[in-house]
Length: 363
Image (cartoon, rainbow, N blue to C red; front, side, top):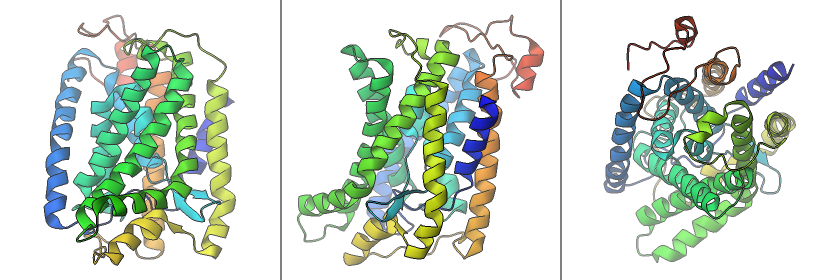
């Protein structure tokens, strides 16, 4: 029953209408700044690809985790969450959760893939701003969460509170970095700090509550993993507290909260013409400084076409996440992951490995 409830809630969330938030739209950054952020982002992406190949040789569980977290980041980072107090819509990022469960390097890698798909097919972000979006959501979002999580663990903070703080840090750091990227590129004759603070303050009404929501999502997911697959967290050296009841019930509660807040506000947001943060803050600031967003290279932002593409993307993302979720958490599929640096446990049944779409003979 819990599996059915959880699946239904995830599906309800994923079939939501398009969100517009942290992503910098196509053409908002001058080309020299776009190129700079590409140079900053690409080494992280390249190292992430290397780590995926390296880890896959020794640990057959890494691909299901990557598939699950990649789908989660993709969907969470384009899922609209109306904020009544601000009158706008925005979204969590998901990279804080991913950074804790698969590490900041792999989290940056899956975020880059999610952002690329969104830029190409969902009119969400852009190809010219892909590097900047990777830096803000992927690099800064992942590493800030991981450092906060590990730092709090070292001083004795419990697993769930540390994950909660990490989720908040990831969200707020992502939008602070977006503010920095915009202010750096658009300042002109205006003082940098003045413009930076203006953009940052404009984000606060929306991202203050959403950061807290992302903290709750992150804490709930980490507690759930602690209860179902604690060996995943053993590799991070964080199993110093006992699993609490903040597990499945908390994950379901957070997802229910997200689903319920999405559904009733869809109509009101449409009636009130609520805009996303990218329009009410990012594009507004850019336009005031002489930069306007370009038409996407693949323009799906055309009436119901964009809704159709989002529905397809949500359905595919939900299927991928559900498929790998089963592989990672279903008790009937025992993968017995090996210790770091060792070969896979050969006691794992080949039928179980094949069921996950993996092969112990390939990387």
